[in-house]
Image (tube, rainbow over all chains, first blue to last red; front, side, top):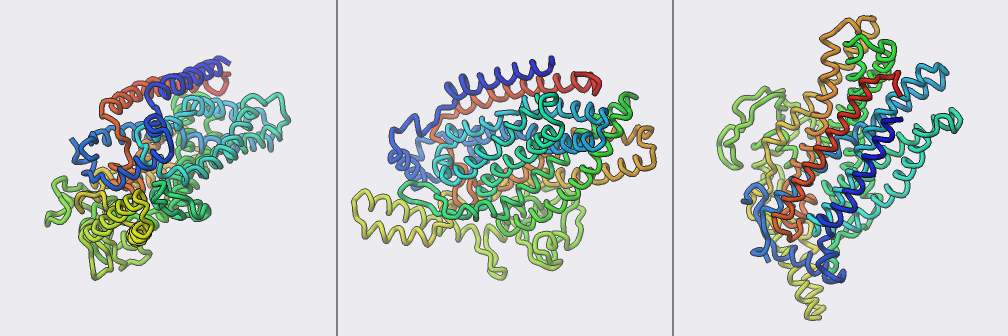
Length: 61
Length: 511
């Protein structure tokens, strides 16, 4: 089962890249990292909801 | 706060999400359909006890395994992106998405994963019937997984069964059944899964046709084509009907998306469907330019599709933006006013709660509740910002529908020539069958472009535009991850194509 071994290798390498590299170094949870409580997170999101008014992506530079 | 936001970050976050989702959707539809085809093949083997059908089943199962192995966990990256790039959105929908995704994890994924092991490693370890049962469970489980994901996506397109909590800034589930049984969610599910069946049929037909063109594995190829063409023809007809129903629902829940799909600016009764056309790239909402450079229109069909009445009124982009009193359509300008009031009331509520002024908080909440259905409009700068990219949506829709129609004819022709016994000598059709495989992927991606580009600017329809759904990150970070993914996905795709091509080259007589 040469193809089976190759696939297992790909699966493990891929999962390692995803969880040990990408998740850790490139995809921290923004709210979990920057705020220490749910109340602070809610306050931050509510702040964005009540104060931001921005143009659509098509007009962004 | 607005001055601290790097606005172009939104575009890179959208591009990264689109890249990931499109890459993910290369694997998913083939898994959904090929699992059922493997179950059909194995059922025939169990019924006939002919070992040739067992070899045939094992071959397609190996290709299923390659696709599954390369595609597995690519969807998890989307969840990473929710937490990092779309944290406001992620926070707000956590309560809604939690239930369907938990059900998906507990039931569907474990069902799929458990029987997956038996299907691949249990040929000589369990009874024939147990193995067949496992193969069917993999097919059912993988499609059930898709159900829950598409329920979540359907909710974003038509948010129902929830209430917004202004204290936690979250949408909270009020009625799980309303979320699950939403016509948009069901429409998404049946259309997406049946299109997966269609793609898998094209996959089997394409590879089998390639064998016939090369004069190899003739009996194997003809048997595979027979089963795949029957499944493909039924699926493609169902895709057409489910697409029609989906468009009908879209006309009610996302009329702007339907207008963009048709490139239709001025609404009309007895509206025609543009079968073929070239959109005018200079056309802007509200101006008098012709929206098309040329078009071939089928009279009254759009009205029939959208309203089930040949003379029904279908609103255009201008009707939806600026309102149409005669048809009782509220314009985006009026919705922005109400959205402004919702945002102002939410701000007042927040301030009153901070000041412990319960009377003011209660009054603000009452005002908010009167306008909450228009909350998202309070974040749009102008009415024109409610229009999705019309050209892309229009062309993607035509590619999807055009190819869908072509596939029906392709399967019907294959079955006709199979019946006459002349298929293997009809090289032009066999070449078309091979091409059909690649066109199947094009149609899949075009379908998602219609769904996701057509609902812009909304992350959650009418409630949350993408510009507010994002995280407060700098552009460089998001741009880096985009190119990182581009490289990773390219490598993985090359790996899959190489392994798949090698296995197809070995053929059904191989390992």
